[in-house]
Length: 58
Image 1: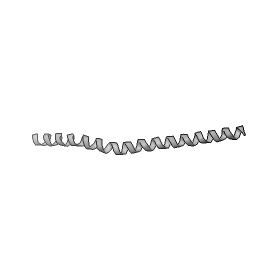
Image 2 (image 1 turned 90 degrees about the vertical axis):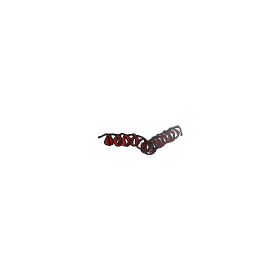
Image 3 (image 1 turned 60 degrees about the vertical axis):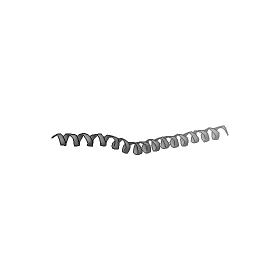
Image 4 (image 1 turned 180 degrees about the horizontal axis):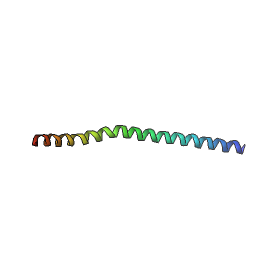
């Protein structure tokens, strides 16, 4: 009885750890995926304006 309860608890801990790791990786991937285009848009606009200024100066 005690062994089965400890096995059951260890299985729950294993499944919980796998779910937590998968969920955190999923959140990190989604945040990175939705966060990088905003960063790119913010970074690309100043680069384009500076390039336009540089080309017009040349």
